[in-house]
Amino acid sequence: MNRPIIDRAAIAPDLRRIERRLMLKHALSLGGLAMLSGCVLDDNAGIERALATALRFTDRMQALLFSRARLARTFPHSALTTPFPFNAYYGIDAVRTVDAGQWRLELSGLIADRRPWSLSQFRALPQESQITRHICVEGWSAIGAWSGVPLATFLRHVGADLRAKYVMFRCFDDYSTSIDMATALHPQTIMALDYDGRSLPPAYGAPMKIRIPTKLGYKNPKYVAALEVTNKFPGGYWEDQGYDWFGGS
Amino acid sequence: MKPDRRRTHTRIVRLTHWVATAAMLCMIGSGWQIYNASPILPFTFPPWATLGGWLAGGIAWHFAAMWVLMAAGLVYLAHGFASGHFRRDIRPQGVRRTAQDFALALRLRLHHRAGAYNAVQRLFYTGVLVVAVLAVLSGLAIWKPVQLGWLSWLLGGYDIARRIHFTMMALIVAFLIVHLTLVAIVPSTLVGMITGGRRIPDSDRTQPRIQP
Image (cartoon, rainbow over all chains, first blue to last red; front, side, top):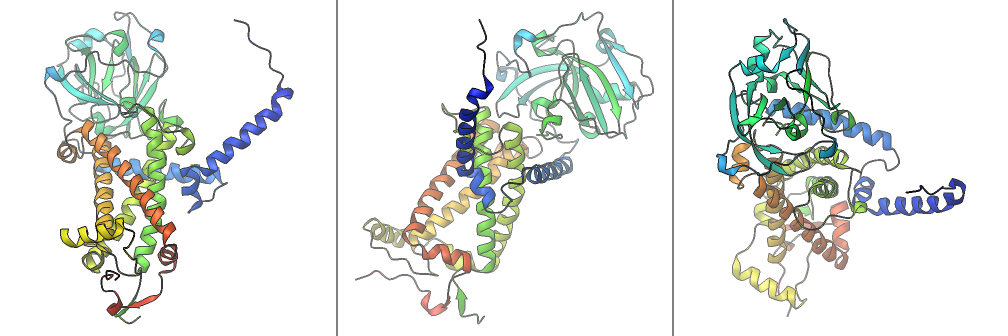
């Protein structure tokens, strides 16, 4: 298909008209009304700052509310959502795969033994299974069955500093996220290698997904390639764009 | 102020009314933004009516306004119970009285008197307070289905709590429409909610009488 050639100068007046109409519509919206009642309407940077501050407060409250002893509800196998939905920041056609035999988990940061780990090494550790509800930040949810190595077991095994604040995950699909140490040590936080009794399929994050039923979907990274234990706030793919960092449920 | 001559609305009622109104409008606009990300009914809200610009912005507004709404709500509820405002002015008045006032209201013969609520108003305000509390509780249940698992369980689990949350929003919007219509019919009530209204002796706060 040929791309039409756009003469910017010719359409500029139209664009300005549309922009004015949109601005007027926004001003009339509920949000506009709400802002009129208290906040400064034209100070967008101020509003952004206030929202960011409120979000940090919300995250502190979430961390206070979190308990390592409180478990996410588990379900019978009959409750599984079939098929479990694929979800990523790209479409299913763009899923990336690696050779499971060649794959290694790279370790860095506050860890005593930082040698990379292979899949067979993970298979040799004790495994945990869970059937829990995955809740997406968009509001939908689905029940899935995962099993793998509890993250706490692994962190102890490699001598991670368990007093550090954060555990960061980098993925080979260019995704990333990070969690608080309390959640990393939660008994239901697992390094999932299997889905419903079989090796993780590519759509679900092969060869390793971090499954955290106490957090929203975007805090459950797939295609994990590297793990870092750190005290420096690490952020993440969605978190850096404005989603709340704690993302707890 | 002498105890027997009170304003129509106390300072705390007026302050919490307007703070909660602003917070509630933010909650509704940002809630529609969040709803649009994964609708549970076969429609979405028009973008111009939503707040936040995109999902993350909607969530940021929703969380920020949530704390304001909860703070204003708690102050209002504590004041309402402690001052006797709920017992005296808001508490519904039984089926017969309410039915009588409803019948009058439907024939447009129910009169409004500053400082005294008729049985229909009492039912209406009690209703929206219960709905607002349920909106907050169901919101907490879908935000924290693990940490507040008991609340989520009490409301029928994550998916049902989500539908309850939506329903409470719809009821609040319906309340807003009726409430604003009535304010338009009796505009002095708006002045009263801003300035507090004139001081009314308690003896004049008896129930509105049926007009002959």
